[in-house]
Length: 333
Image (cartoon, rainbow, N blue to C red; front, side):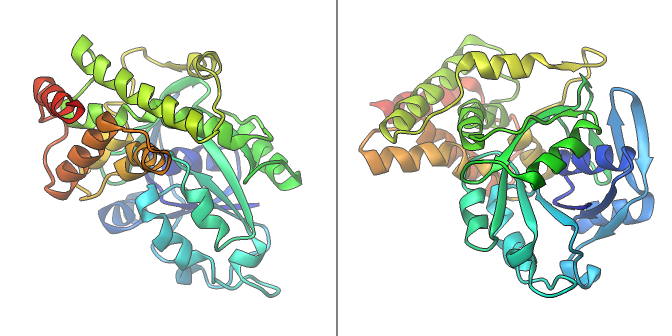
């Protein structure tokens, strides 16, 4: 199999670099300054074993690859707000021997949130979900850090909407040989919805910085409580807190103080991308709340504030916790 990593940022770069280390053929897809750095200097991936530069094939657009191969696996690792554009670009690409990528090739959604699989299934026949527990940082072009040990990440895999097949087992085996735990599950979306609850705190960190004080933790708890309420109303099952905690316990940083500088939303603000994934994290809870008549004031505040920060390219962590708490209290009343 050849792995085409669509979006070679923190998650995509770690996946691509580790797969390449294990001897798999990898193509990275990136844009802008990151593409230029990867093309000219390679991917500098720092893991628990130290830094290593990977000289891999790098493209900006699918046209640069010509006809795709029958053994290609597409791994979608862009933020969800960029999924539609990426799917539209890759689904119609011709595959050697006939047909298109959307008709013939497997596509794995290696992303936070729960929307990309639905978007992908409109364009691809074979869609797989990946619940990504992979602490990694990408804030500089050409550079990714992922220093968890003994595994770089835990990646639950399964067909979307449910089930498993020989393809997903083959992908899992490749990842298992590449410093990942990659369990194949029949209910991958149960894992992804559970991860979504944890990701509701991403906006708090992006807006105010590391979540260390009781006030910030209280906002995170309130956002998750809203999330649990609306998911229950929608009849959505999630992994239990104990299951999620067991997964996180497998991710230890080497050295201990080398953990990522911030989560994915914090990194988006730090890079000044102009977009953030809050619409598909907190916004998912807001959407379900509106569909089921349940107020979600905390998640509405976090979504709106994060979107404003991204649009105005405000610095990550530049809102005080007191300011955020004030917005939440005003929305609740």
